[in-house]
Length: 62
Image (tube, rainbow, N blue to C red):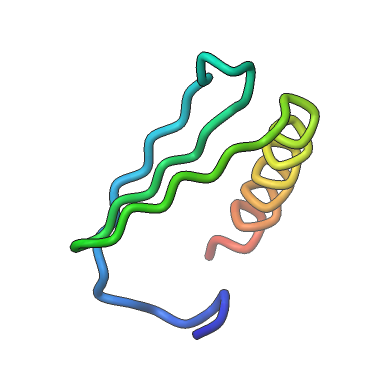
């Protein structure tokens, strides 16, 4: 499965700070739970990549 492959899997995404000073992305799908912790700096890089991808996707709308 790649970035352009569609899927019928539904997932929930939660994003928030932890009590340890990290930023957690928590993904829950079916019976799978995936907590991913990032430093604030890493989280800012991820946020920048998401914004960049959103701008590109928006420009490709027809």
